[in-house]
Length: 414
Ligand code: ATP
Image (cartoon, rainbow, N blue to C red; front, side):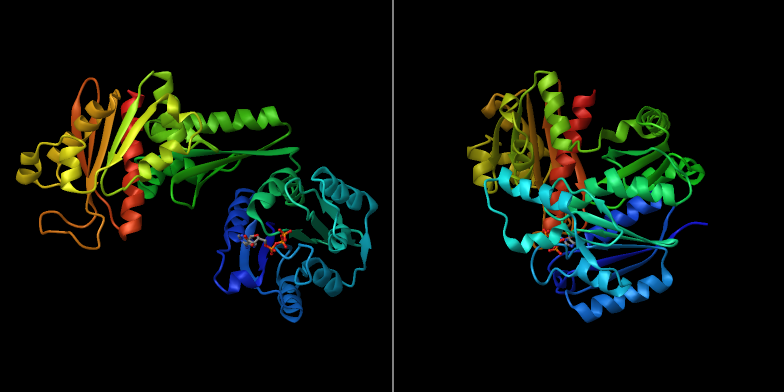
């Protein structure tokens, strides 16, 4: 029988709308890949009475309770204290944990504030979840068939704690006892979520171990998760699943795990000894910003021009004024002329341009909001293509910048 899980986000910030409960999403996604059913997400502020009430309710209905947040050193960090109180377990100081904590401070040349001592206190009989990225370790309390997993708030601390300790623990608890759980994320571009899912529908329906699941987020991604006796076996299972998916969607898969499109594009430019110049209108430098976020991009990125006005397009990029007059600034002809212009002006092998209507104003009956033209000038060719994006100004700009990188990636693939 599968475990019924509940995730409790603790922190007033969540209720004030200051932060989004991405921990609940991330943890749910990982639990479902283990076949654990998450039945409730709850959020509660830093209030002892309400934390107790939410926790008591969870104890009545869930086999597995995972809390996030409230493990810090300050007075309003209450999670461990409340859980221990509700369960009637005394908190005890663990010498080894205190030492680890103290040495973290010593390494940074700081004396540990006395407040932090409470981060080395744990409910009696509980297991410690090491946290290599912060001061607050997590806790596992076992209570008959129930388990309570207490994690800190920051996502960058939680993720490794899940991988290294919590997921293997839960997999054992869920009935199978794999030594390792490994996963790999496949990142796609140039295809929408439903289209991608449709192409591998049968694989998604037939999955068991490894599992494969689409991930929420701004990009199309699939996560493959394998449970196995050792890391090599898990990797082999993942490789086999990846090969199956690649056989159908390979031309859309630009990378895995922490790869980003700008990184992959940069790698290809370097490998092929090509350089890039950018001419951006409606994206206002967003593409250049992503390209230059990659260390070492000076190997291949020469220059980017934000040519917002028609005059700038003409004077800086040498777009013939007649092209703008005849076809408009948002047109495939202008996009091509901009790409050609930046290629000439920068001396780069590839010129990439964007011109479009990000909104909310500026649309005409023939040129609707969200219409964006991309120009690509290469040693072989000068081409343009149009895309229609939906969403507000920020969304259109972000999507257009992403599409420009997709276009570049497609060209570099060839
Ligand atoms: P710390 O040891 O850093 O004080 P903590 O365990 O006390 O951590 P909180 O103080 O509750 O955690 O939260 C710290 C930060 O972690 C928040 O400011 C927020 O950025 C992030 N965070 C907390 N809860 C969530 C959540 N549910 N989803 C996403 N991020 C969160």
